[in-house]
Length: 439
Image 1: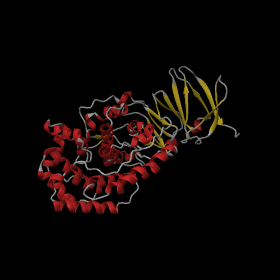
Image 2: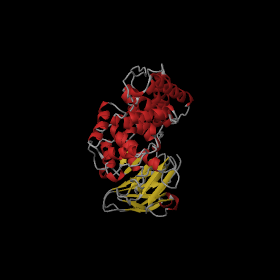
Image 3: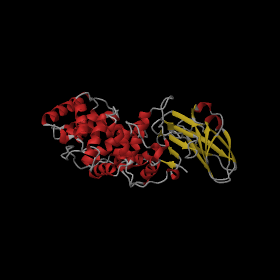
Image 4: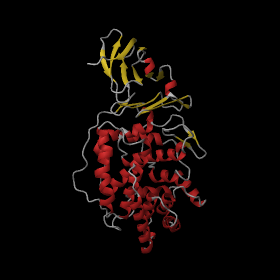
């Protein structure tokens, strides 16, 4: 089974003029009416997520993100005590712009006129100081601008419009069009917070500007996690790709699962999202830490059916960006390979392996990974149809391919130096590969 990302069919953003002002009633962030009702219903039926959240609240835990957990408890319970704690944090030590925006937006009924003005000023100061061009920083500015829109004139046009009409077009859409991969796996969390905020307030779906690319995000997200789970004290975590080797980062794992929850909430009818829902539904991965449980409670829809991710293709190859992800199976002991933008990793026998040390073909189900050192002369053959991925070759290079009993033909590698070959069932043959002569 395999997943191939096709050439991108880029569409322009909606042509209708948008003023980027919102006069929607609070809350404006992440809580449209249907989700707000679900948040309260989960408390009423005393779901496992609510009980875990409530346990931390009763224990007066020091929340890792008080600007998310405390206002969420206020909305779920109507408890002024929790809401006042959120407001006190925001007016006091709170400094994270994103969380300040959430407190202001979700705790409006509790804010006096003086408190509201003080918190608006603090958020405005944070907006003025924020200059980062990375996706999390831009996301935070958009959330803050939406939260105080109408309280401060011109925040939407000043902070939201440039993100949608300039940054998104130049740093995302144009790079996708040029064959790049501008959205890092670690940015999926910020990306879907941005998606939700823009659609809920301005009816903008940024995915439409590069529809084919964003259709592949759910499968890529699932496959970009190591096969073996990480057993923490509170629950097991699926660990997303780590750029450098070391101990897994639970905070990254929490954000990665929260991103997947947000994906499903954003488009629960799409088949690719239903696979994500199936991937999320195993109870052993339900986040029970003080950091993770607010996201489980906010974003999970337990009434949403999912499709078993075991039916999801376990090979993702995107020749346009050179990304290649393969799992031998969907079991925890699977062999796993990841390649993107010059980074190559393999996971097998419970550990990350240096790809350069691999000296033999790596058989992964009906897919074989072949290092470049073995690609000049190899023998293909299987009882069933098989696919070979030759890795480590020159990017975008032409090669002469000679398959036994067939005419010599040319084949070209993708931008990542990957050559994909397919052989029919019971077709055993010697394969010779050499660089094509310059024309």
